Image (cartoon, rainbow, N blue to C red):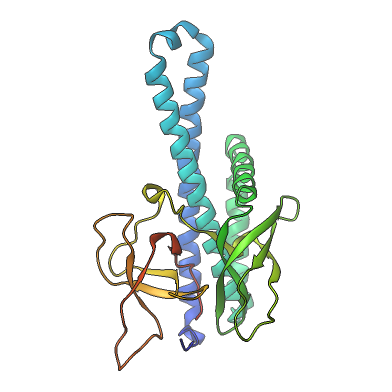
Length: 278
């Protein structure tokens, strides 16, 4: 596959900043939703402590409700990771494309105002718990294959399938192994140390129900068949079941003037990071 530079020229800075602010609003909304879920969980905990006999009478209903709330809290936490990763990617794009000092100043001032406003102790406490949860999830990826951005420059990002060897909670860095280096790489397996923003977990192969469902026309990042490299692709058709393969059209994959449609397993397809360059 041939690679091409992204289309964001000198006039793209304003659009990038608009996307950045939209993503920041999304992150704020996720925080509010998290606060609501925590408040509801705390209410149930207080009721249980105040009236243990109530638990005996309706234990199944209470446990089901708690399970639903904790499941929702987990989903919100995962969405927060995704939104935060997108924000980091947008910021990297702005810095690398030469965003003006004045534009960066506006972003910094806006973030400072948000930090002053977000002084509520419950929010801070939940944020700390959310970070612990993120770190625990990262540590649990040991031994798993993930998508990793191993190289990035002004023109393109390079994503490969790698295996997680270790996650350091102190430095918040993954140590990963590229088990199948390409022909232009050294013949030996190569190790990398990467920040959390460079890693995207794959859906579980044996649990299609928990995998994201990308609709027809959606742009995704997917493993190109027969390789361990990931490229941008578009979902070409609707799937009947979440366990079905995706039918994708990969960018820059032209054959005889058209894009061939290629089948890729659902567990080798992830959301396209914002600001992706190819």
